[in-house]
Length: 367
Image 1 (tube, rainbow, N blue to C red):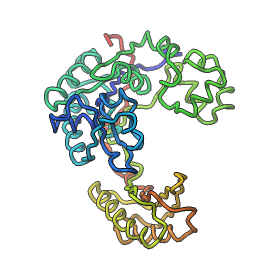
Image 2: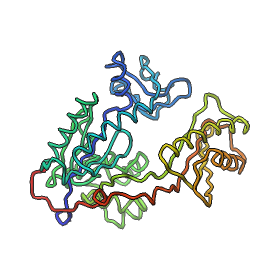
Image 3: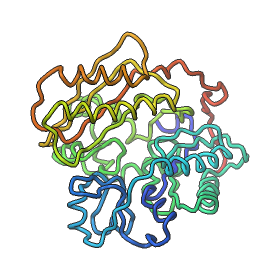
Image 4: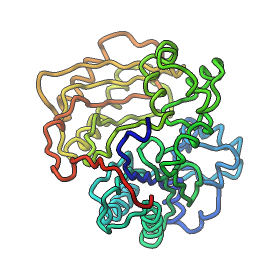
């Protein structure tokens, strides 16, 4: 089945411990030390951890309180998104020297389709090496890369030789690579799904491949068909330049739980202002406003309202968020509030035809 598909050359570039590495680069005193970005204070949550901190079990989304127990000498560093964005833009300029088919996933990772590239090089492996070398020499950070025939395998492969490494999965090696892969390494299989698969005797790609599409549909719903195809090396999603933003949001975690709606409105004012700034900076507007509420017991609730027109103004955002707050009684005291806008106007933006064009040729030269 794999032989019948057009083969692309996809590179997934993933920066190594990006936020933490930026902090260490900007402050040489932090190099070689266990640091965590964010997470300071009693209720803080860690955004990223250096590899020195990860050795102690510190990781993103962990509370600062737990992290300091695992690593008593951990150093907390404030987040600096302006700096992360600045460096991310430098890295993307390097990507565009090789191909226009670049799909950023976040500030620190992107897919590149180099099937046809600006250097005319046949080897995607060599291109990945050149890109990583330039990032290190011009920016000062290390990156890892995965290289293969589609986005799924490239992303899985980029995690193989981290940090500061790369892995190529050649077309003839794809099926064996996927069969040997631990099910936890499959992109799209989270912790809960992995546990469910374990219970059904699915531990590797080979185990997953033995299940029929009907079986996977029955036990894993809409995702079943996805698992059936990716384990066979089938993932036809193209690298999409100018990836369309689906939503834009801002949120705040509070040092003390809030039980008064008056205090919550005060916090929402600041959040709405931040959302409005981000909308205007990105030159987008949206129709659907969603209020996110996380209670002191960590349960999460969202309330949404779709307006008949596109908005970006703080006044309208805060008024809508206020209506959503009073829409129903609160279940408990609140530790986090957030506002997001979705149903954006970005669908109407034009994408350059030459960047949008799919590359689907059967390759006969070195991978």
